Image 1: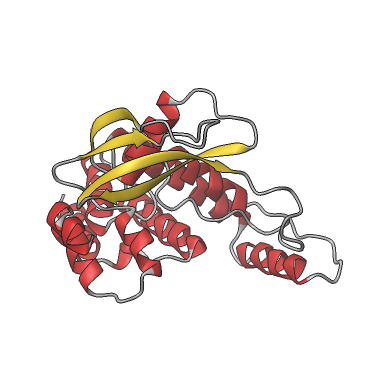
Image 2: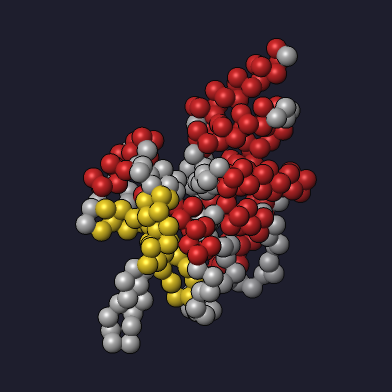
Length: 255
């Protein structure tokens, strides 16, 4: 499986995979991988009344990213059965990777006591629209009423953490994250986690549009905060991002 993945992913992903021995980080790393050649997207077969399974259904060919696979699956599957959600993962069958969509049962309400009020999980590898919506939700959490539960205390800690920033700052961050997500979706790029080279290109695109350096710096800060909330590696400290910003500032001073 590792050999099959290493042969198909981009150089940066290969490097990141080689630097970790923690399988838990593979999901985050592979969620932004560019596969070359792109992978097919299949819809998993369902169990039939006689106990057999229907064959997988091809949905698309040439899918380069996990986020694109998620969006394509949602576009192709109009009706999700009640009690299920559409999930997309990476499958390796006989050494050949592909994206596989399937219907995953929803967790029943109350199945995990004490966690229903927790913040929604970060939409790692999901479409850009889901990332923008998630950031908007988690950055506007109200402070809950005290009820003595640990889950409530953790939710309150998240809410108080957001209040360490001025509301105007958070409002500006939400607009910046929406802008990033639209740009990433328009170029079929993963929005979360963002890759360093993609963030650099986004900021450079803003400079080409004549945006002020202070505005560009604000968008970088918003993306840093987005990844901080998602508790995943922050791409804005990537050397390519830092060098790109330095060049933008120098160009601005000389013009």
